[in-house]
Length: 342
Image (cartoon, rainbow, N blue to C red; front, side):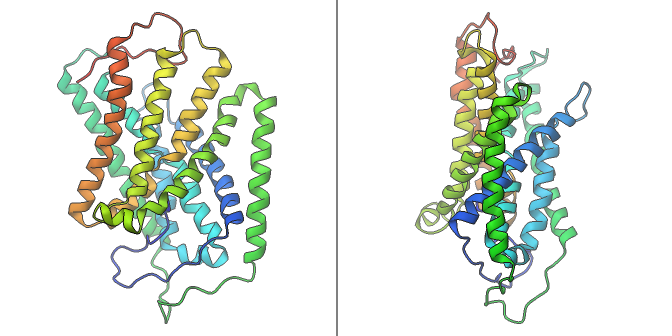
């Protein structure tokens, strides 16, 4: 979503200076480039911290990394926008929004509720497992966000907080570089898809991730105006993106674990790319954390609860019902869940 928009030091009562709108070309180029970087960071950081005997699930490190950068970026958003509004958009909406993911987090919660590894414990323990993943990710995300704000420090107060920050003379060059690098990154990913079979799922995820990030950017328009007013000021755009991403990931997860019998390697690569790329970048925890921190306490709790309930509802209605009714005795892309619903 529009991660950096209006997100500054939440303790300050002084309104932030308005930011100039990014031109479409540089904005798209910056989002394409930064979303690809975000997917790579998330995928490989998660793999790095996923191993036998790991003390905590690997995805949480990507969530913390994205929120840490987001915390620093929202503190220094005016400085980033001075170089280029498209650069500020790319760092917040593109990079941080793509490093973090709401849909994969909710899938981990669902796995605990569903007891996918078939552990021999009660339904109540299943609930505790899901609650643990929920609470730990929220705590780590908000903690990392605050740490990023602390590291970045409070920006220097301008004499006039109403005027927009002056543009850098390098803005045209920065905008041109974002467009060129975005095109080059998309072309490079397309080439790698065809020549490197061992990393094909990640390469395709880079391309799908661009689609998810651009869709989230457009949905951010629902966060302001009449749409937000209709739901009492709640970030409708972020909520819609996160809920939609969970719905798509629920379908993809079913396809990965049973709906597609004896799948081919290319089919599994595409499904993995949809999960890591499209769903991973369409949804975001970094913006979600910023909004939770900025909203009034009651609205913050309501917004967080509605977002989590919506995500879990899609996984329950799509994946949960399928796994309770289907019999899977053939090869699939991912291991078939062996657990049961809470």
